Image 1 (cartoon, rainbow, N blue to C red):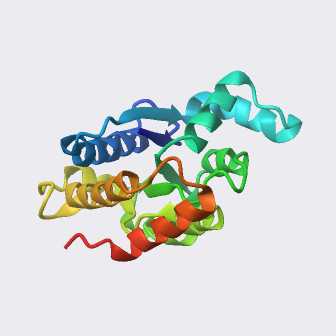
Image 2 (cartoon, rainbow, N blue to C red; image 1 turned 90 degrees about the horizontal axis):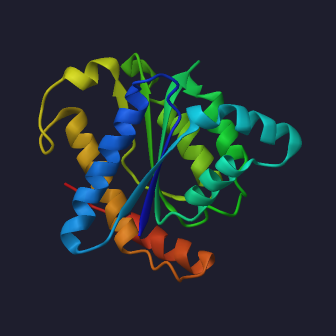
Length: 204
């Protein structure tokens, strides 16, 4: 199975990319002990910014952008991470997902996450990202992860408190949906099965 993480961070190094990597590691850590072969690919939107803008105008993606879109639509599970700009997801993040066919993510397990300078912007996950992927009919896991600047040094461990615990919980939820997803199912059957899995998820 293939896990794709989309990072819309603009700087190098990027806290957005760091969060994407940590989430991917958490998902892999849940799936690997089950004997599942997981391939991880990270799509850095910063490297595709010009191609995304040109595609919006011309309607034709150059090969690197087409490959990124194919990776996202062909993934078993998806992690989508954006920095918060002006109380919403970044324009680059939204523009990239505007290029994806509205039916292509139907039933796909998705973990949403965001980074920002202040915890006050955490509601962007529920006000911007969750509605976006719900519109695309993706199966969005219950736990969304927001990382403010202060969260990175807040301490705690992966099972008790803070950002590490949220990463672990979200990763476990995405892993559960990926493990339950038969790749050969038709999208309409797939989304029904995943909706049942979402309603049954409990990570107390």
